Length: 338
Image (cartoon, rainbow, N blue to C red; front, side, top):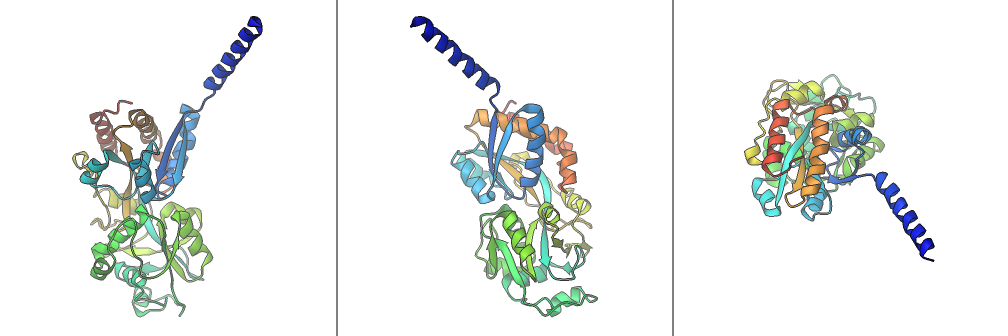
């Protein structure tokens, strides 16, 4: 009996050793759908070299902030940076991961990507419900050579707490006094008109399936879903196209400061060629979760070192080396020695 027991213990110990040898370390994150395409791509490559699997829930920035505040994930992700006061209140720190652009997307028969021109005033009028038809005089003035239809505009917006919404509404607040007075900015607002889609995917799907609609989405989703995106007039008075060069022109104006926990909105950048709805996406860490913070820092340090080409492929702007070095110093200053 003793011999059988010893054999059983030996077999169990062997099974445990095998399971441990093949155990996959998991990094759990949640939040920004704006960042999902690049985090997914980085994670796929990182697992091959490090063996760590990223379990990332694309639930919107509001959900990411909530989950890291409640300590249910290793990191949260938000396109709306938190103020130093809010970070202190929840015992969090934050850093940017990548920079991208939010674009208006439309579904109008015969209109091709990058063909239609819009500006902040027409965007404001459409989302306030003041501009109701595609052949409105304000839209026609920006597109005199286009044969615009007299069809009612279906407005699409996010239904969940969203950093993409925070970037988009921050753009409108800065350029449209009526929007500032009536609606304001944030991850969630009381929309005057329109239908809500959950996540970047939801907005993309609504616009794709609904004729004569308009929405806003991260540029990677617009491209991946073959959606029609518009040009925009920037603060310099120039109509610019959504592309790496105009996102990079906006990024060059950004001055992220670790003393303020990198708290910075980038909308309506003043560069001559800058895309006006650009923004960073941020990673949120809980100061008291040291093991999780080390895992997270290792993942983003690898991504900062090896992931720029993939970011560019997906039309994000990688952070400059000087900013990456500031982030690494910020980690160490906050006790994250990866």
